Length: 94
Image (cartoon, rainbow, N blue to C red; front, top):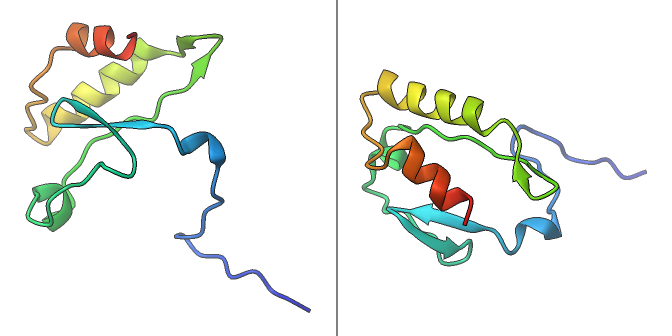
């Protein structure tokens, strides 16, 4: 009998994620090209704020709530996103 090794690092690969773009310093990159320096504070110190978005019928669901959490988290950690919520919304809707 075979057992499945599960942990907090176990995941199921999803083909839908192969073509996602990742924003690194304002540049959208394919996931295989998106890299962060090992000297980045997110890597060295674990600093980070992120939001996962769902799209339904071509629209981002609950975008206003996602942005409020994202910018609220950034403020709490004294991060400066470098882009306004309106500019980010415009970029997301492209």
